[in-house]
Image (cartoon, rainbow over all chains, first blue to last red; front, side, top):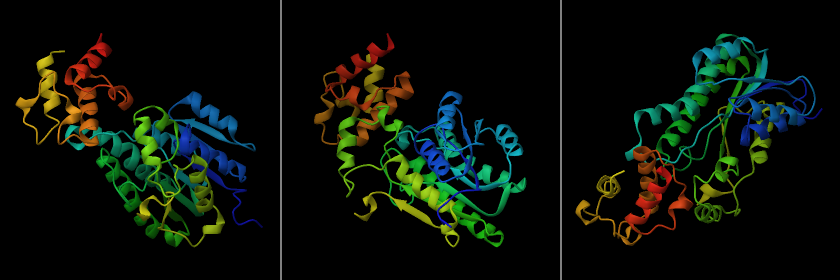
Length: 247
Length: 77
């Protein structure tokens, strides 16, 4: 038996309409999982759904920062063997120009939504014994920090702290919780131009492996943490940063 | 958009350079304290105060406050 296989597992992936979440959903399907994918953009979510291998996958269009939508979504879920909380927001903003609503928005999407999702899934008893919870955190806030992302850093370290508590509290049921801490990943967000091309090129060279990561490289780590190969790994943060934080 | 307000908002993003030193001719990239943090703060300020969301690469060719003011103005009209 292949310990890295996800055959027979039902996995929920949030933020699956683009970037890392899309790659995670596709990789999980390639390993045999049945996927439930969520995202806010219906058209792009459908694109991901059509890319999934195998049958029986589902998509749910929902805004997970809205408590009523979140609760309704969880009610409709089958029993899960894994969740990947991936939905996130990054928006370069210096602290002196950050307003209360900026803080709320980033904390809500990056930290509160995964916290509430986990809480509600647990309350509604939607997790199978031995389930694996994977939170996409970041090197930012956990291993290092960047200019213009103080609140992002706070949200991601909050997520990591939450994961540790969850890991301890759910261990008696054999449910595991882990984070993945990626460095900069090549996604559409980078192509949007919110960071200058010259700056990006210079930043890529700061990585010992001389490039940013690829979404699928985070996805492979998610597959690993969701699989039975990692039944004795809980409360950990898997660093995927091309060596960036070695320096 | 008033140039005087723009200069005031621009100057507020600097700590060591006195606000009185800023005018439309100021070559901001030549200021001693100029850094990538100021650049981001100015982009953020323009977004917050004028609802113009410039990309860093759009701001790059500007060197004087006037040039940046004109760029923002062109996005507003």
